[in-house]
Length: 273
Image (cartoon, rainbow, N blue to C red; front, side):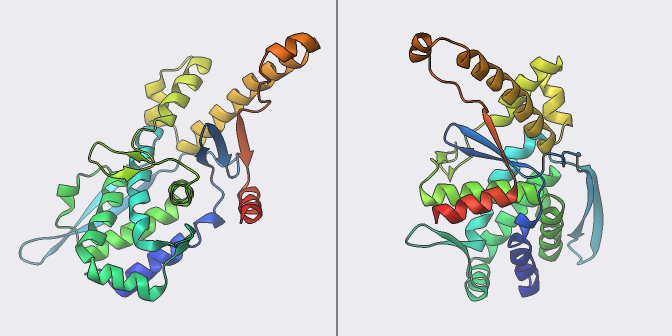
C-alpha cells in the first residue's frame, strides 16, 4: 500500500522543484522560453531499483541502469507528469492552481487509490522505459519511492510539466486532445524534434543522434543560442534598411528564444497576479 508518508513526501518534493535551476522549456503560444541556468546542461544519468513481489510474497529487486531523459522521450514523460498533477494540485474557481491541502491529498489517494497508483506507475514506467503491464507486481512503496527519486533527479522535467499545467488551467495556453481522447497540453507538440532538426543542420549531425543521446537542457540551450544568433542577425539587417523599406517589412524579433532565470519567471508571475 502507498503510505501517508509516501504521498506527503512526494507533495513536499513537488513544492520545492522550483529551487532547482536546471533549464527547462516553456512555450506560450508561438513564443519559446528557456527557464533556468543556461550553464547547467550536463546529461543526467541515473540507476534505479524496483521491488517486485512474487505470488508467494517474496520480494525480488531489479535494477535499471543508465537511465536518462532524452529529448525524444521528454514529451511522453512530461505528459504523464502533467496528468499526475491532478492529484497534487487543485484548480480553484478563479482558475488559479494551488497545492492541495494535506487532508485533500490523503482523501483523494484513499478514495481513488487505484487511479492514483496508476498515474504514479505511468510516470515511473515512462521514465525507466518500462511498459505499465510490466509494473503490475511492483510494490506501491517501491513505486512511490522511485517517483520521489525521479523528482530529485529531474526537477526540471516536473517544472516543465507544472508550468504548462498552470497555464492550461488558467486559460493562457491551449490544450490538445490525444488519440485516446484525453485532454493534454503535449499530445500534438513535437518541439524537440523541430529543435533537433535545426541544431542538426547547423552542426551537421543526424537529428536522431541528438534526440537519442543529448540531454533536454543541452538541446534547448543550444537551440536557443543558435536561433538567437540567427534572429539577431535578421534584426540587424532589418535595422539597416531605409525607412520606406522598413515600413514594408515586418520587424523581426531580436531574440527568438527568451532566456529567463527562475527568479525572472517568479517576478513576472507576481506582476501578472
